[in-house]
Length: 260
Length: 57
Image 1 (cartoon, each protein chain N blue to C red):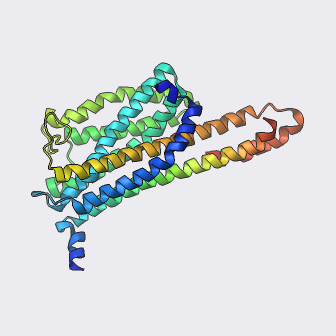
Image 2 (cartoon, rainbow over the protein chains, first blue to last red):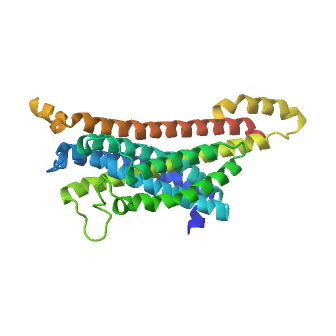
Image 3 (cartoon, rainbow over the protein chains, first blue to last red):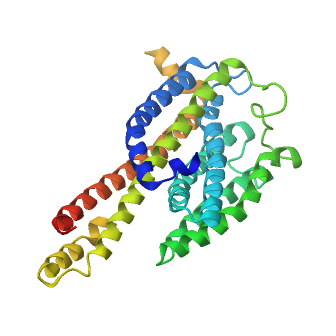
């Protein structure tokens, strides 16, 4: 089933059909989520209106973790089965995950200042999420740091897989160590400890962020595949018969700036 | 007007709530814009390349 969808030509066809729907749905769900988060949701009895930061902070944190899991799984598939799409998927997802991690860290800081009285503490949860951000940056630097993209992809895949140990550390850091950060109130054993009037906006925003991840992933994968195809075309166009050669060469060398 | 003012004051937390939302919008919106432009450029340069090489392929 996965290998059926993982054919690059079929991916290009299916993603072209899915992408417009996915983009509009993303906008719609995030707009609904913003309305629920900023207007419909009640203020917290302890935190007042500051609790509204939660509706971007928590979904961003979930996507930071899920995004990394996606990069790691795609990297594993790329390493084991050498599937070309898996490597493209991992490479395309990493900047999106890094952006969500950055949003999680900064909104957390803006929430921590009024609630904890500090922008930042070096405790287990905050530090392990900062490590996650650096793992993303390291992965991005590594896959782009080689002249040969295949070598960069392999080196990045190994880093992504090693970094997976950080995910359970982040998830359980609030239980294993003393921290200012509150423990899980949604994804826990038993019932969520958050009121329904706050849970619904949170889940709508989470769905919106998930759709945003999917939309940007498809868009970035298609861009990457186009660029690779253009590169292959340029390389293949070199050994042409003599009369047509100068024109093709000139065309190929006139383009590199636009191809980047 | 004062109701609107009270809303934007966010119970005294305006300096934390609004920057949090603005920053998230800037980061995620910026990434979306950047990704979309990269995609558009990739389509354009691929089409141009295929036009130039087209007849011989």
